[in-house]
Amino acid sequence: MKILLINGPNLNMLGNRDSGFYGSKSLNEIQEIIEEKAKYLSVDLINFQSNHEGEIVEFIQKNSSLASGIIINAGALTHYGISLRDSLSDSKLPFVEVHLSNIYSREEFRRISLLAPIALGVIAGLKFKGYEYAFDYLTNYLDQKDLQ
Image (cartoon, one colour):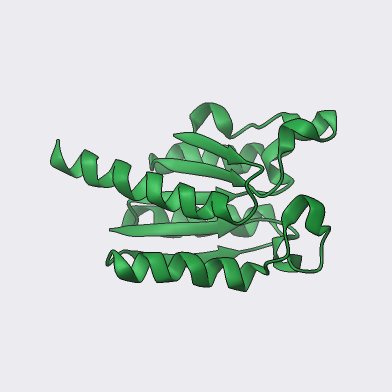
């Protein structure tokens, strides 16, 4: 099983951003937590972060045929990234959308997700734990799918 862990704009700045919204862990720390879980379950994890929508789209296009699923925190692209949504849809891979902050308790524009309608689920507001829950859910989902 191979999972793509994708992070969008500004997530490379975690640890320096508002900890009230995003927590205090850096992206590297979050990736290390998920990598440990992946090793334990013999899951191949590929981490990717970009501040550019086109680079994320190209990453999905190049890697979707090799992967079983995606965990994505698209950051601000969640709210306006139509080409990102299209690439996720075209990949035909199950994915879980993650947000460190509770996007539904923030500004009105952050409450709209273009990705949520095609995602397996959305986890928001649980800081870095959201990535862990997304990983657990996605791997369980993929294991059950393999048994069918």
